[in-house]
Length: 143
Figure 1: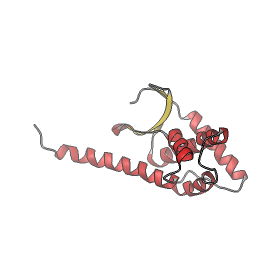
Figure 2: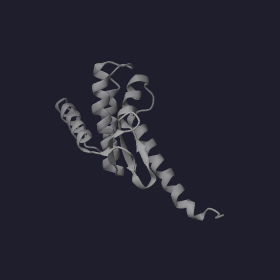
Figure 3: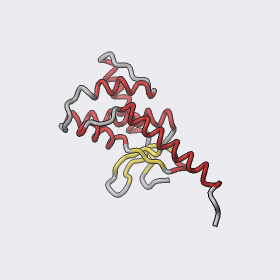
């Protein structure tokens, strides 16, 4: 288990705020991996850079992205993770796979790069590689 304090509450509330805000604009989000395409469309309307609007979007969209991961792959949010008190999502406790959705969205907004669906597939790939490694490990030569 990582250092920090388990707390799913704030990210869930932030994700729900985004769902409500975008729902009022006709963009329906349902926490499915496919819904990341609609979120990507909204995020891509912002120019690359950083402002107060970007910071708010990184917070809400980061929470939503993390909730898509958590609801589809499992996981637990942790806050106040040392050394800088950040918040992250432990996707697979048995393999200690941590994802930092707020940082992922901040980087996406600042620099562009991979789309949200691509980032989700990257997380899926990380969990599969780790599981495959764990499954193969007992077959490794002993000694």
